[in-house]
Length: 188
Image (cartoon, rainbow, N blue to C red; front, side, top):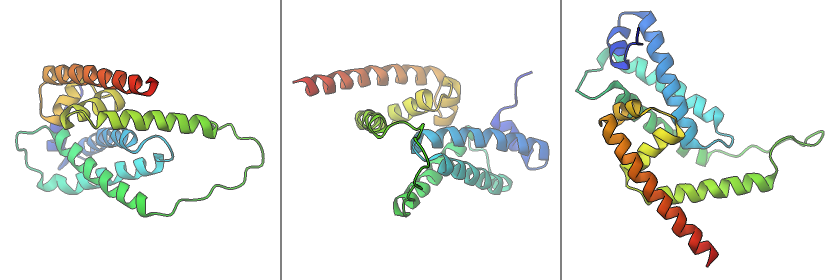
């Protein structure tokens, strides 16, 4: 038996606590995966967890008045998550940065050099992705970084799965060209 869709769970969640719990578990998973990607992996896990929790609270609050408008429920969740992420990113930029305690011994963490190289590579990739059209950028983020299926991505963006696959193929081709151009520029 297939798992019920988010749309079905949302319709049942208002009157059925079990459906609400299933809905929130799936919403939390979606929001957490997307938040982790958008915030990056460096020290952002707590913020990603907080954003996922806030998304769940917003969904529970909105359920009694939620009206189906022909869009997938995933698009509703995706919109809330994007807004909560923007709020979290603004708050994080204003917050003071904690200072680490002095360690008792050698650290098993990646070296500062390897972290810097990884961050530089990630920054380069993000810079090149900004040259893609916004829809292609979102498709790559959801498909490659978040790990959503073509069907899940299509539901979140209000497209067909085939259109998502075609747009992803074109975006990856363009990104490969941008990477090749960037690497050629570094050598010259």
